[in-house]
Image (tube, rainbow over all chains, first blue to last red; front, side, top):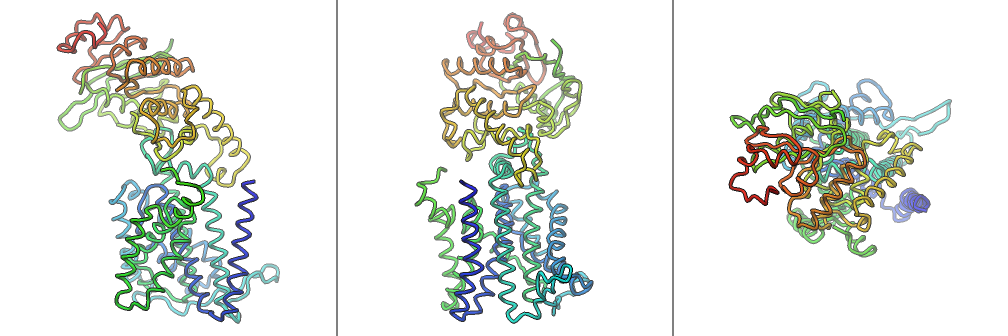
Length: 327
Length: 259
């Protein structure tokens, strides 16, 4: 029964995302919304990675580093070595995952604010590396990245060349939404399987977890690698959409935003990053008319939200429909 | 009865302080052995040394002839030497049942990927863990509160939950950290019964404890520490009659050591 309900929910969200929203956008003629919603979908994938590190009890303010890394890996492979974008997508994720294992092994031993501070520095290190390395082309970045090409198997076109499309924005939107759905179906499965149990045991008490035989060092690294994979994956798609990548494409501010997306949605809800990213992205845009006061008002609202709803926006829905969630 | 655990010449130094000094003893299969001693005698350090939470400065602990000192705690647990904690160390935000289910980790046959994709083996594992958790909860008298969030449990039950978590790992030796501390007479009686029950399940019990009367009733043998050194070892009767032990506890009321 649980499975049937999940399948219905999945089908409903696919219809909403892939049929209803594009239809609404066509009808209203607001084609710019494609770009906005694509960004929200991609940012929520990157934030999902941060959410996963929260889930094992680590505050991660370094996701921007992996998004940047993923963007560069894809851009370099496409422009220098002529790889298909579709192949660079998993490669960018895997490259970031491998890098995160090397970085994670020493730093995941830290907890609390110490881990947070080291990750905060990571984004800045990534930016400086991008400035200094020869392959990243310094401050000029990599520009004019070609749009994703076609994928053909036995002469059958599975994915058309984005450059030949009338509306590449819609194509990017569909790609981002499918990626987001896949990502969150995977996350949902992860959290609701025994792995979720183990991650929680890590989050709540690492000592006890190791006493019951959990290899905490290994589990931490696995979770961090998945997290960084998502960061690199999202970053690669971003580079392809904007057809460019610069050292400043993802900065410390972005890393902080990825974390805020998780906070805002709720750290105990696996779909929190989607809601958090959506609200944060549109909330910021709505406040645009306040001009100089945009950031001030935005910050005040955020602080107020965290005080009133420390468990995130999702806690609002749950406390109404299912009674107070036990704490 | 053969030895399951052998502690030999175990020493732990913290800077200039020698917390445990040249301690040797062995634990026999399926016995209840208690380590006692005045405050600061090095009991806790010894406890951590045996469960591999701390690496000894010198000496070693062998489990069934295999050296476990220097292993990570999860590796020692995998071999079968599992410790419990005092009551605050539980998975606070999980339900009581989930605490015990989570602790079945060492019994899983499926891999992490197997659990992710929900393979048949993984589903069998999960079913089995649920059944076994219910059995352990019933055994410890916790089944009525299985759905409670663990942090809401009263003290006595928290301690039982700690033992439940330990049992879920299917240990050969379980190390209990002051299982009777802070309990009144009646609660202690119940806890003593539980510890006996644990031994009847075929688990060897090593416990560190302050509560003398309880230790005297429950233990097969007792090891006494003072200033980090072993000063006596023997049956409860031998310990009661040992002049060195009496001296170590000098100033302590006679009743409190059960004389």
